[in-house]
Image (tube, rainbow over all chains, first blue to last red; front, side, top):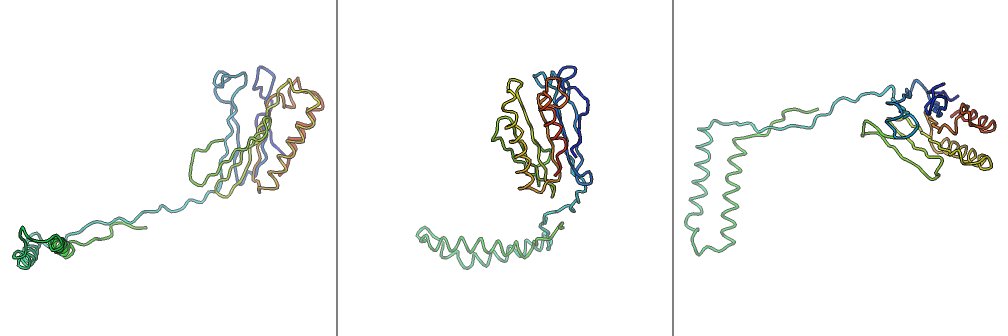
Length: 135
Length: 102
């Protein structure tokens, strides 16, 4: 059976009520009605009826964290300098005779790519990604 | 109908009839409907039967299409059983609304 949520309450004038009924399972939801702030709040001659539906028995899920990574240094600054200098010398010895004003664009691209790859190899050997936080 | 939370909530509003408007709410496995009814005092008795048939059809439609956990009916004072302007026949129909089961 529907339950009158505003029994005997006049919502328009002194004795004119609006209707507000609800049928629900109180074990699943909680439903209540409130009159809000009087007639002036609505701009009409009726009082505002606010109905609240609250869900019961919601099972909270554990919080989810996304994986956070950080870059950790695995060599001292001195060791990194030595490794970097050795790698750059190797690249220089291979390419310094070939780099000139007359160098074609394809060779220039290969030289550039090789330099970037050399720097990445140094970085990857000295720094590692480590997991900071996960679920 | 509004919700304080956004995730997991589905609210739909249906306003096919000027006098009878309803919204459905789905939240975390719970489904419900809110029917709001407005009836102008200028609407005469002859159409009152159609009005209640439409209301009954709306309730039956909702009961058939959704497994309702709750149903809320909000009516204008002209559709209130307590209204001093409510003719006896309407009053009985309104009281019948209060007997709705889902």
